[in-house]
Image (cartoon, rainbow, N blue to C red; front, side, top):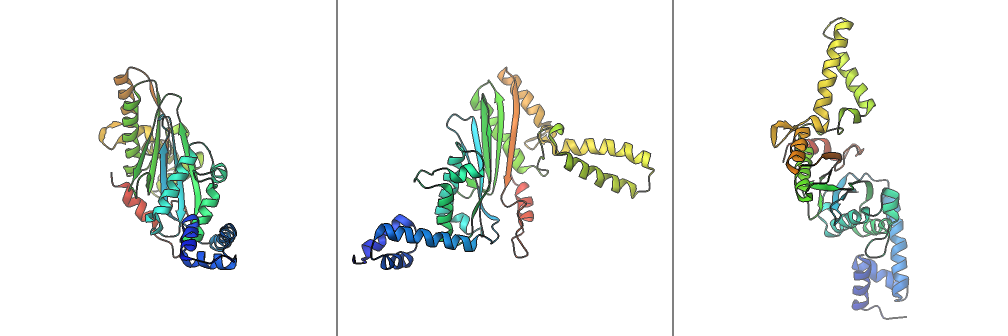
Length: 313
């Protein structure tokens, strides 16, 4: 049996990222065999990860990246149990790594199965972090925007480190004009999406979810009926109010936060005029960390935090 020296333990620690005592115990159990110790730690890590998989994970980071040619951008949300983990260098590096992988692998399943720069899959990397850091983690969602000509711009609000934050926005501008200009305008629109008091639900009225429209229509109808007005009057009132609501919640119709006298639609039109060629907002994505996650009775109040962030620029 090989002697379990401090140097051997240190070597396993550097290769595995697991604590010194766990490394020492693994080497003792495997008679000092480094490969066997690594496999034992991996199996123990899977066991620990399985035990933690049911725990709520609504904290963590949103990571973003834009391709070298500026025409593809991605966002991913990597969750953990506490905001303390978001400050962990290993966790931040993992979030950035996953964003890089997402540039070539689309969808959670494909990203999870794709290899990282170290040769392990993203799924294996997350499992390893669970075992090492001691919290449940999951790759919750991803999004990608691409243009054939133009620019995809990224804005990360409340940044926690390079390429990571608590709220991320992508905006894709399609156009044949100067890419640097399109990138700059796209970033300004992304900042608008992150900071406007009414986060946009869709790009245009036609893109709104019919379920959301019907829900708002019912709310407005019930509200109007409570006033005692006749149903015929209420129906006419609702037509105008639903149009107003649609203009408030679609991106192109919103007043630009940096110039409220100008809508986003007008900003894009002015950019097209400046460049001398058509410009179109192909799409946008907004990820606010933890939104929609069931955090349980002991979970943090994310709704209040996101509302607070939305008011910042």
